[in-house]
Length: 320
Image (cartoon, rainbow, N blue to C red):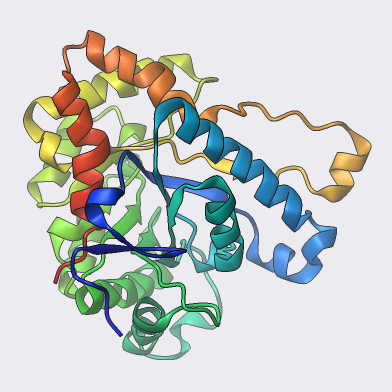
């Protein structure tokens, strides 16, 4: 079974693209060590605690700001848990789009078989369901910091999967390393199409001309990592969004890259010291602080609607 035309796959089933509403394109319900979670399970952190924490934050986001959809950018090796995502979506009433693909890291087993075989596994998830369920991911992911042999291998696999599925592909990048364009060429060589590629974390660099070079490739760019505890960065990134929107609004996206459940505290550390969430309203920061700044910088409501509704809907709709 392939994707349904005009529909976006969510963890509770396909949704008409026009029903996505305001969307955050790159957040995380849970993001942690795959091996620790699979090995220690509930002894590492309580599943119900993760669900309740995420549901509370998504409800706040939805009730205060009308956000209806969140894309969970957690791939396989950052502890994607589709039944957990489905329960969070069911209780919160917020659509969640799940990812497939890989974060960067060297695993001894990856390159012991052809990249096309790994790509086929990703394609099967997108067509038939993942994790022994009928839940199908609605977006692919890969990541690069340095262009190591394992990164090149994974880019070939995920690029092949993007070509086969027509799904969007989010790329975790480090623009300050000036290797993003080379990494994109790897995806293009594997058959991925630029109009369905999101280049993430572009706000990390001060080199705006380099971001514009990325846009010339035909890809989308995303500004994220917006944090209350970094006010100077927040001001700079908001200004960057306004600047890029003047010429590139149709391929511009914003999000927080926020993790709802902070797994820096496991069950044992919680017993030793009370845990306080450093920013329980982290998912609301764009609406609380960034949008008012963009309005002061001259962006109108139609432009903001495009940024938060039309652009996510366009990139998330698979190629037919």
